[in-house]
Length: 382
Image 1: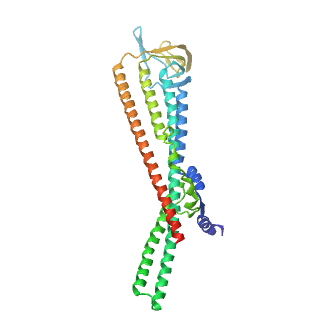
Image 2 (image 1 turned 90 degrees about the horizontal axis):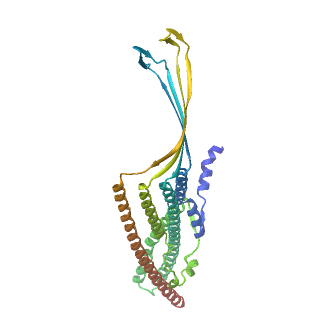
Image 3 (image 1 turned 60 degrees about the vertical axis):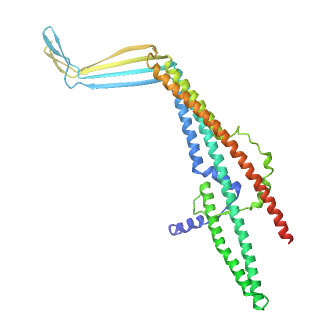
């Protein structure tokens, strides 16, 4: 019985209507939107990359072992006699310790990973800003479509009332048939607009659900009215046009710092490196029982293990060639830095233009809203 009821239970849960306001829509989107989750995972990935870079500064210990089986015995010539070596297998083990003392490239790599983390955080911040704007626009779009639908409903009700009055006047001989036909045409012309607005409401709702990370089939009810946000516009002339907190410009600034770090990293290729090392080895050989060619007697199998000693020292590497290749790479990076600076200047000018254009559009919209309010007051008075 439970198995038979499970589909019905799931369907009942799926058909629950979710009440959505602007605050709820933003909260759900910032937690469930896939792009936000991808940005958070990217931060974790870069964090592991930063830890990996730090591991390069720590001492590294490596253990190695080798076992070799002798398939054909070695032989040597001694006093006119050819003597076969009785070795049956060889074993070599070693333990190596390495510690970087002066490796400038490692510190620049660590600095690069730090900048990567800053860039990942800034991109995640940009994704959240973009998502908040898109969700807010979609939410307002649903409210606009719903209010438009209500307005059309009122207009359709008014057109039906006009049609009924015209028909009643015509029935009693106080009106012409032309008035009845005109009122009926006006009433029927509003019906396609009603269907169009209904489809528009569903499309905007699907966009809002996609941004929130919900299933498209999940039914929602968007609460609120546009009139509730009437005082949110304020005086557009008081808006701050400063771009210091613009995330696109901050990302370009971080990318410029990355290129500067890359340039410093390339310059370290001409610097010497100093590494301390230590090595300890242990080896062994063994043979099976066989005929001793010197005594002509069989000797038992034996194994011999011995230490190869412990070594410690310093390794200094000084690059002598490749200077011209490194210089060419540095020049390429310098050109990239200049290009990025030009892109930043162009983007800043473009953002200033967009901000001023947006303020002009907001001013025009505020004037249109004020004019619409005056017309509404005149219509109510009439």
